[in-house]
Length: 253
Ligand code: PEP
Image (cartoon, rainbow, N blue to C red; front, side):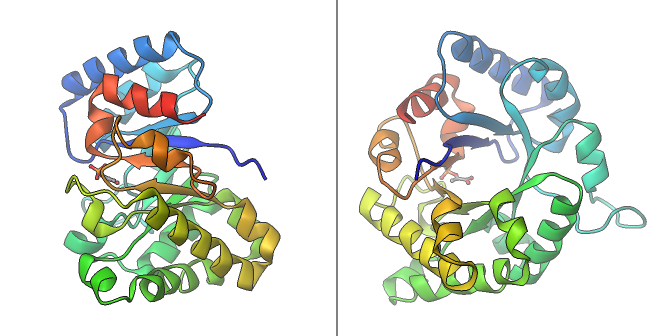
């Protein structure tokens, strides 16, 4: 089955608005000179969304956010709701990134609540899963990822699943310069398809869009993206360098 490819840039807490707009301009110039085969998304900080929405009007780049509240409105200081994102043209949102799990106490339960909220309001979640170095070294990586899938996605109804993108991001590979080998990544992606298949049927397992994330760069993108179960990449550091991000986009054929 040919699944659509997605290359999504997670800018994390980097760039001011003016710096971000310059980076976006360079990216747009580069993209105007090519016909990307993959869908491209950028997830800048919340502060950038309004200006980015204006710049991206009429382009094929999808605007994404890095997080969202599970609450709709009210006394939740510091939170940003799905309605606020929707008004700014956000189409996708990263949920339960490992940095959110590690530093802000996000869990599988909170991920489930957030996924339910965004789907209800027609924003598409990119749900992040992945094991720690300790999990991998102790041979528990499949178990950990299975739990992240079953305790969240098994609790949703079948028709919701095709609206979700999964990002497999081994924590030990994020921002470390260490990348999973294409074989390690592909093995986990195939495993995730099996886990989805067990509950929802093999067709749905095969249909899910699963990205790899963890130190993807211009040098390793082609070999990762050539793997049969890898449908794109969630790119952190390299997405802030337009030339490099464009090379990653080119590698997705
Ligand atoms: C990420 O932020 O999701 C990520 C994968 O970061 P990096 O590419 O920098 O490892």
